[in-house]
Image 1: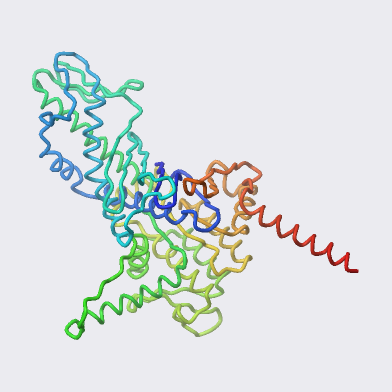
Image 2: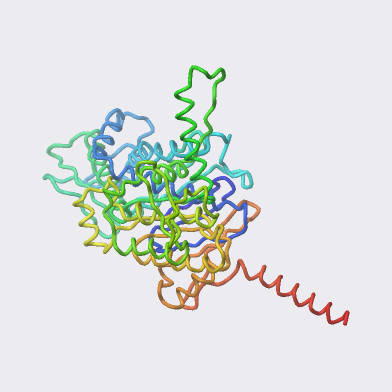
Length: 479
């Protein structure tokens, strides 16, 4: 599945592809990387939740039941006198309605919750409306909108749709670039009945699009920047809300609760609701968590289910420290360990056990998407390198890693990993996010067996080297 973000906040254009095992995004500050990641997360979360709805088919049926096609004057007419008629325009309008009531509605809710305190998220540089294009197996769905909501403005498909009249019931078939939908002339004689045939076919096709994504992606996770601070503050924030609710009668003024973005609330909720007893763990992924504890943290991370807290125990000690009492490195990495051990190793409850087993057999491992901002935060360069190796190991275990970074150590280590063939170049993507006069744009970097072309860090490194040489020359002159 491809997702293209356009004119979304400071972002002019950026593209994601869920088929990449490792997607590294580099670039300077304040160019829109976080905006792009949050939009990508919202799209994946919406598709994942829609695919898990048990009554999804009924939902779509009920939503379109009130549509009086073809009495709607905007709905294209179907020539019932022809044996075969091209129905792209009719099919497109039905698909727009279906995606608008599902993907459009879910995205609107997520964006409203995340940016409720902003008047607009449209690009001020280009002056254009925010737009998101979601490329599914059959359709490309184009949504446009702002903080107040997104709507589907177009649906595109590569095949042409035809309605063919026959004298018996036949199922839809694909012939090269044609999709042929059959109408039984003995039963479906009116234009309204013909439209209903198209609608039923489109419903099945839309559901299949959502389900196909869920077969490839079990779940999506977001680890925001400043993980330790957010985790500790949200944990305290929850306790404050509980205290306020118990002392409501003592409050003399109305208290406005600030909006929390979808990805931040999901991050905190998942960490606070870990259920260690129900985990269906992967031994390979558990080993990754142990490797971080052994090689980076020099201690273990424990989740206390009674207190709903993470604790750190340094090796060879009897200490049990709350994250607030640990170093910035430990408190920043600890939530990552908890995610890997307790969340990445769990099968989403939205995925039935039978489907999980089928996916495991078909794809080798259930795939999850892990989006992480600035994984190098608070880490010494040596630990940045170790953690990059670990994220690459996760990618090799079926976790699609998407990360932003400002670290040349992360960048160069990923290049070396590909040179060592631990990750194949065709499975890795790297984009340089740079500001243009229309906003931030992602420029895809060349990747081959020699690694990634450095169009980001080399300038800063070169300037430091040149400065050093000039300073040395000046010292020689003084002598």
